Length: 84
Image 1 (cartoon, rainbow, N blue to C red):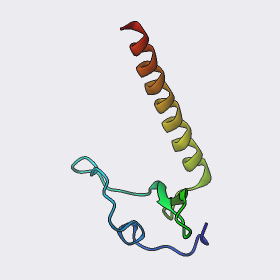
Image 2 (cartoon, rainbow, N blue to C red; image 1 turned 90 degrees about the vertical axis):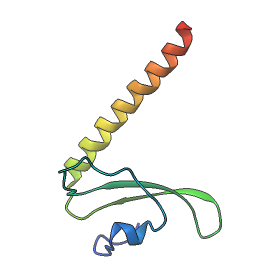
Image 3 (cartoon, one colour; image 1 turned 180 degrees about the horizontal axis):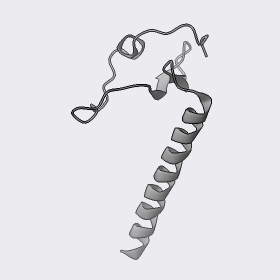
Image 4 (cartoon, rainbow, N blue to C red; image 1 turned 60 degrees about the vertical axis):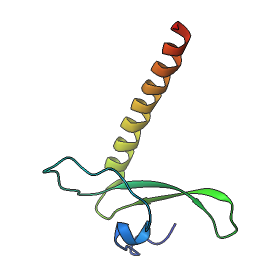
């Protein structure tokens, strides 16, 4: 990962990608970004980035909550299929 001081605008770093917008009236303060990409040798890989201003506790909390929500959604989808 690059040094924490090497920041560029998100649109520049991830040119060509799109995300759904925030709800009207919300203001972005920081972001956690997991990017599926091809490395310099053409292999599929993952890159992790975060914006300036997020501390480690916020990062860990956000990732844990998102992981738990995704685990719940996947479990619900799996168990709903079994009932059919």
